[in-house]
Amino acid sequence: MAEGVSLLTLVTDHELFSLCRESFQDGIGDTEVQVVPIDANANGWSAAEGLNAGLAEARHRWAVLAHQDVLFPTGWWPRAHSQLSALPRPVGVAGTFGVDALGRFRGHLLDPHGHRRTGPFPHPIVSLDEHLIIVDREHGLAFDESVPHFHCYGTDIVLQSLAQGLDAVVINAPVVHLSGGRLDDKFSVSSRVLAEKWRSRGVIPTCAALLGTNTLRGSLMMPIYKAIRKHSRQAASQARLVDCLADFGAPPAL
Image (cartoon, rainbow, N blue to C red; front, side, top):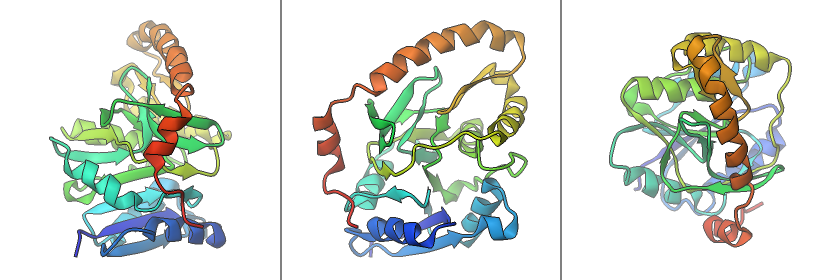
């Protein structure tokens, strides 16, 4: 039997989660799939607390942490696993869309914002879009529960991975994310905690925003990051539809 995989999801809508789970399992072959739904709201958990509870239940080396409104193309995990297995260095976390050290968008994703594809693949990143995070549990990574609410936890675990000398990358294994994400007033709370924790970096690029750290280094770097970000946003949105169709393969099974 092929190496197993654990699917972890914070669930508030069981019907939507059922579509996510079924699409993940479609075309997976003889791979054992452990499904771990997590009711963070019932327990009063933040995303970090809920996902840590899920990781504690996970049985397999690889844990795929997906939003409940993610749909997977047929055979997604075998494709993703083959790319992860081919990486030359140990990877702590991986995903499908994020930003690199200069704040440029990297990865491949289809969501209400459109089709975004910018490689090359695999590509090192410093932040992941939280719709999908793959964790290699062999390295003992966990989410920092001091990062509150449901924002910034993806960036933090990437930076933890890098701080431990592990790689963090995006691979070319796109999914469909049915929502485009939403920033509420709690994002500013989460981002302040993140910026203080990693203030030595000067600027912390996330998919949602460039976070300054109230340091001289951050003030000097921010205008450069903003210029790079503007160009990267345009490049990411100009991916060709033919590339999208070729990379997705079979559509998600509904």
